[in-house]
Amino acid sequence: TDNCSATVTVIDTISPSAVCQNINAYLDGAGNATIVASDIDGGSTDNCGTANLSASLTAFTCADLGANNVTLTVDDGNGNTSNCVSVVTIIDTISPSAVCQNINAYLDGAGNTTIVAADIDGGSTDNCGTVNLSASLTAFTCADLGANNVILTVDDGNGNTSNCVSVVTIIDTISPSAVCQNIN
Image (cartoon, rainbow, N blue to C red; front, side):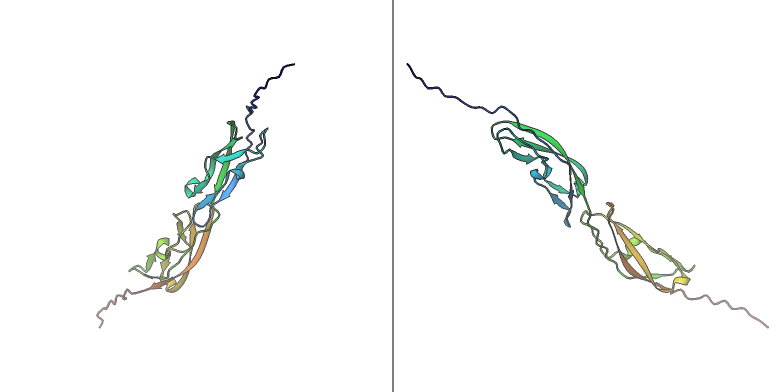
């Protein structure tokens, strides 16, 4: 009989199976959202056990609203990788902060005055920046003298709105015009 020894090198050449799932992620009050790779993993597997997961994008801001393609990479630790693409939909559900201010508005010589929504805005804000303003009443006449409640609506353009009430006081400072005539 004779003996010899041999080195048998076991090599894993089977790539893992990457399985993605689409998810929604919601912006916070600062306009940010964060995910981890396991959030978009839909059950990835490997023949040799646990695989390492990584995502191509994990931090989102208001600039990423809507659908974003994120690549999930599954690495088996033995030099084999596999990828799939998940759609991460970024959603803003945070309502803007409506801030009103009370103002005075003065009638003109014809008994009219107008305001714009920005006149009663006291610094409204939103987690994603720009807001659209609208006022429930912008045109006033002599019939509106005194205090008038005007609703300011703040819309962030993403389906979220907020309201506040401003008091618009209409003031008449135009003196009447006296017209005399001589009579016998």
